[in-house]
Image (cartoon, rainbow, N blue to C red; front, side):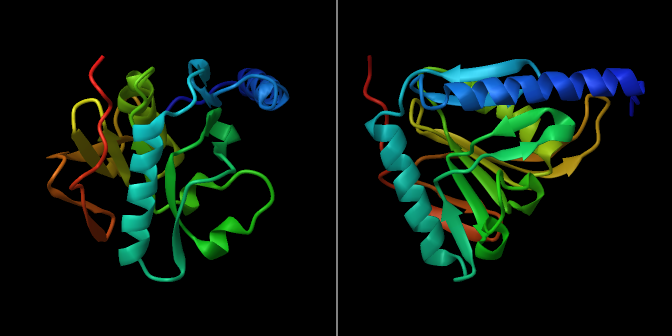
Length: 198
């Protein structure tokens, strides 16, 4: 573990707050979704299209049909944020307890049971690379990825330390049509929408 001097930590915190202020100021002006990573600001300019939004809806409904009442598969705002890590993300679906949603500002990422992403056609590396790195840093124990481009996905679990920081140790790949287990709940991936061929 590397400990930065106080002035370096202060500088990183100042930079993160400046990026967050910029993102908040642009949220209602520019279309798309903003997130903050270790590399800087990610701006997905493309609004999610039909298959992305339909997949998100299917996943939310399928998860909520098998989860206990006190949990929700949340698809709205706010973001999840860890200022200490310099990361602010907005998962497509957040599995979280109702009680943990009653907070001012962003959700504490450590309260999420799982984060679910539907891969963006315009920026797939954000889901397959960036979030695969960031979610274990945030302490999110389960990360499920659904990719409408290829009709495949993966569930990542078991955060463990590495020289590059926390990473998921276990990856279970799946193809659409198979059942998939996210945390404790198994859902079908049958009939999930795909992006049309370009």
